[in-house]
Amino acid sequence: MTKFILRWAINAIALYLTVLILPGRIDLTTGLVSIIWLALIFGLVNALFRPLINLLTCPLIVLTLGLFTLVINTFMFWLTSVIGQQFDLGLIIAEPVWWNAFLGGLVVSVVSVLMTMILKDELKGRK
Image (cartoon, rainbow, N blue to C red; front, side, top):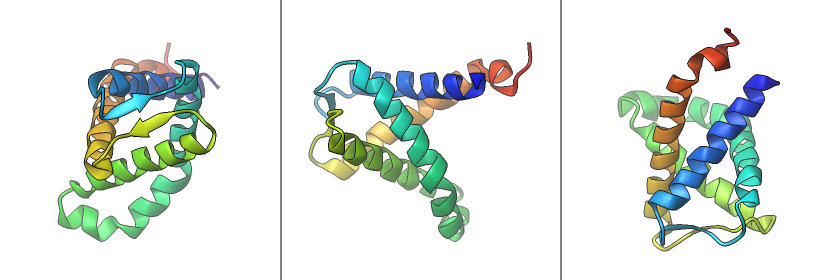
């Protein structure tokens, strides 16, 4: 349960920093409480869809030496925004959507990787 909450917190901080780093490109029209819900949606989207998409695009990932994962991150970030808008959570990606979703996915990925490296012991369950 602690691992789940840490992952949720990492996603929330990554999404919040994305909104701060990319103003005008990625906007949050509702309050900061929606970041918590968007982080949950982002985690669920990644848990449910990413394994299938990685499996289906494995040849492209290998062929591009892993760079195609940036396209997958873009899609996951965009999908989180679309689902969030259905629940009135207000994560808006400005035009051009693909490019801004790419930047948003890139920021979320970098922040998530850095925070995971910092909290690796807690995520593994060591004390």
